[in-house]
Length: 217
Image (cartoon, rainbow, N blue to C red; front, side, top):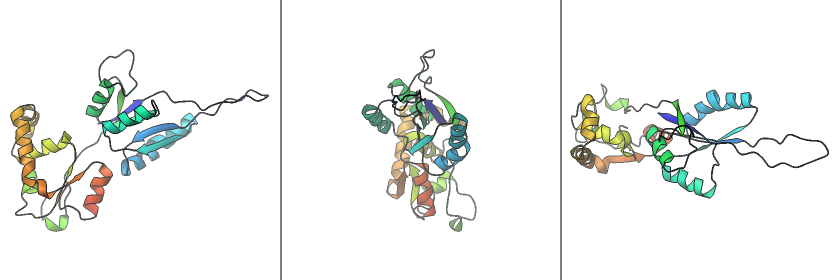
């Protein structure tokens, strides 16, 4: 789930002349994912909102890493008017005090509201498969040689590993919520580690597949 997190926007510096002039508002700075996500947001969200607000919006891409947000907040606190991130990143960043919090809500979800839903799906080279591959096929490098592309993040990656290991979807998080389940997922990943091409952003994932850098991703 994409999350839009709001900070108070900073105002531009002002000066005094013979007449009172309303100071121009500084652009709202937004941190968001790059690639097609940013292009789509610019078209259907940022541009119409900027016209409504009569204030420009500047978007900057990021990889969703909390450490990147922490470093930026250390150098320039409250620089961003809004940040797009996932649910778990929201809760962690909120607990670390990196985001503005709703004063009436003390939970670690009080720093933002949902702005988008993001789904993950398998993609593959259609010239190499007559039918849609399964997660078991994803791991079968003997029958289907080639690189595999996976997200450099435990979120979704561990779930995929357990699905490939035969865990039924309805039992996925019960298994993952145990030490044995975690060990099982990491052991499964070790089986194909030499074949993995890691990606951090959706734009990287798309580039790897389009350039032929992986058979499946």
